[in-house]
Length: 272
Image (cartoon, rainbow, N blue to C red; front, side, top):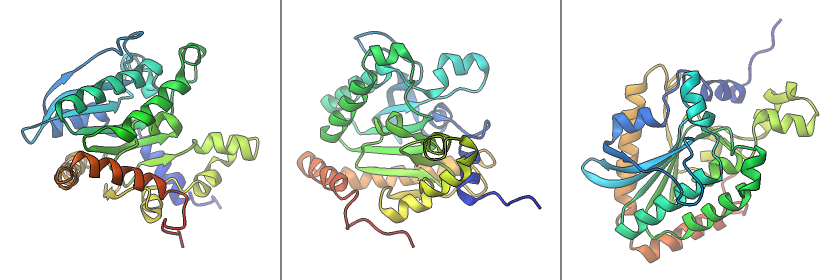
């Protein structure tokens, strides 16, 4: 008799579904007047990290997100959503523009992780991620991060440091992929399903731990009812942004710091 697939592993498969809506799908549906901005002004353009100015219910905002692509051509153009250092430096450039003009920053995470190629390492991949974390921890405008699909390792966290984090119910967010975890612990990725349970990477578990503030219900998956999921996400973004815009810059940064400092402490919720 075939063993039943675990809930966590099933969620991993849905998060990676080929027909799952991606960042630019949400941009086209939820926002208007999107004007993409390119390049990091240091090395070049990175198609994996897409960003620019847009309007959200008439209000100007800065959008930053990872886009994977669907066709072979599009996936190559966007490097399968795996950013090089210039992608993270571009996100920093856009965040600084947003801060200068007092624009809220909305980031959208969907990546297996940062690109691990030799060129990326030579150009300072680790430094680019670290400097992104430093910048997003102190930027003086509201920052809301949404995990749309797969949130993998530092590649996701680089644009995930925010005042509030939202996850779609079939998205995942973890320090490492289940396959990577299994390869380290059991020397084989055949234990990926077991690793997915151990990592507590699902939205419900992360919400229980206090890592994320909001979970948007997808039903059986965003690819089956994209319009409803997008409408529900828009409502959560709208209410969350209104809440954060009530705070002045000093309070915003102070509360963001306190939010980060509680991670790993006894103040976090515990899984049953």
